[in-house]
Image (cartoon, rainbow, N blue to C red):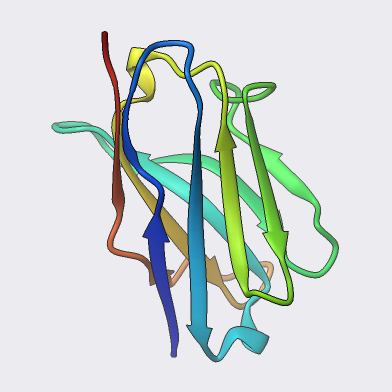
Length: 119
């Protein structure tokens, strides 16, 4: 009942920046938390960052802490991921996800957006 659409991916040089966006529609009032995950070819999906919608409390994977910032705009039902100091190992398909309670799994997923960091 929640639809998510990511945008903002692309090709960037090492050390560069990108800002990903994820727009939510449908039963957006049911969203408790939204997050970003990424998956490189041949690797498992990994957690990047998440934010509690109401409180704005954010959690980051250690690999991106102090480089990435997650934020949300309540009026636009949109979550952002500002990525600075990008490294080649950040290359992956980035997915937006949402969950409805603190204990639930992330059950709604976007289609993904490709981020490639290369010289």
